[in-house]
Image (cartoon, rainbow, N blue to C red):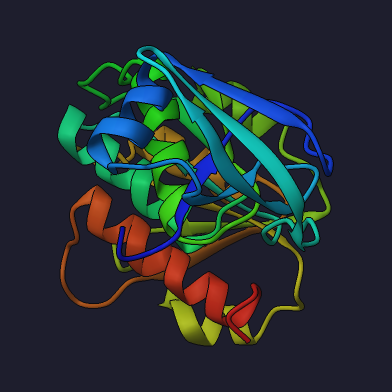
Amino acid sequence: MSHVLRLFIENDLHTGEEIVLSGNSAHYVSKVMRGRIGTIIRLFNGKDGEWQSEIGQIERRQVVLQVQGKLRPQTICPDIELVFSPVKRTRQEFIVEKATELGVRNMQIVNTKFSNQKPARSERLQTIIVEAAEQTERMDLPKIAEIVDLKDWLLEFPTDRVLVFCDESGTDTAPILAALNNNPTKATSVLIGPEGGFSKQERELIAQTPGALAVSLGPRILRSDTAAVAALAMVQAVYGDWK
């Protein structure tokens, strides 16, 4: 193995703990990554920090790890939320993967008037989240909420957050970087529209929401997945942990 393998697990992590991997996890470690007795594996569970472990035993259907010591304390990503409407499955999976890599803490799927796709399977999205977190050194997993209607979500929007509304209409909007720099740092929700855009009524509801900040992502109309990545990068640079 050319690098130290990193795995997310559900188990509590303590020095001397024995972790038994089975099923897909055991297959991945022993067959895909060709782990051997003595191979070092870094473990994290989203609450206890990152720990070093070593393969102590490999059997036909399971791999036994011995937890040796703590490598890093637990950290969490900035309070940045991505809110998006379902798009085509592959693009939806791309959005979830890149949002995880970019360090969002939460994701919310919303149903809009022009939504014409169903949410991807939650099990599939969770797998993507775990794999992206493992590969990008983040210590926590973002939570992704079940789909709700945009109207209902807006009605419950907290007054102490900024709602960054990526408005493709291009009217009465400031460039996103300028808009963010002119607003105090706060917990932030980034709202990305569906492939068909928002309806007039939805735009009005968004504009009336406390904390709403309409921004432009430039002169070109971006696909939802591209817009999500562009907006999150800007928010991380101004409000998040890229500073």
